Image (cartoon, rainbow, N blue to C red; front, side, top):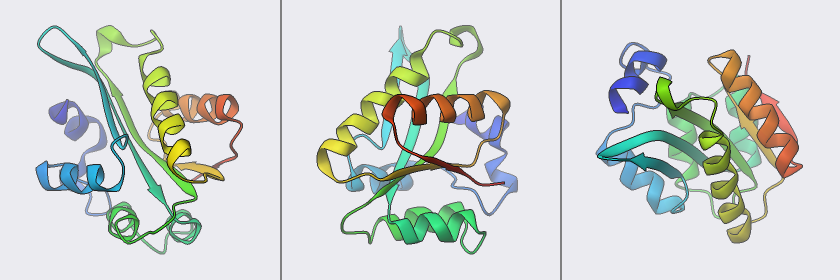
Length: 150
């Protein structure tokens, strides 16, 4: 899944993006256990989602281009009561796409986060048409407004 993420998002070539490694995974899980979710079949994950709870200020700064995706995580680590959730990424192996796995995992993770803190809004930086559609669907199903980075 990490190789798929590197290939699709080209994180190694973009210093603005979050490059997920063991340290980043530990940081994410320290914020909330539902920041990372995966669905496994057989020997490993076939779907992986990453969500980052943050402040409204962090969301606004990211969407306006004042801070990078890496800064979203840095600021989220300092946020006491998150009010926004960044729909950071959803990756599904090609042979498992269009089965609703990413949608289910994302909705479950958001529910767990909403049980832990007040959530007012979702935001995303879609890299594909599928990412845009999933973000919009999640917004509709959770009845939370969605803001997108251009």
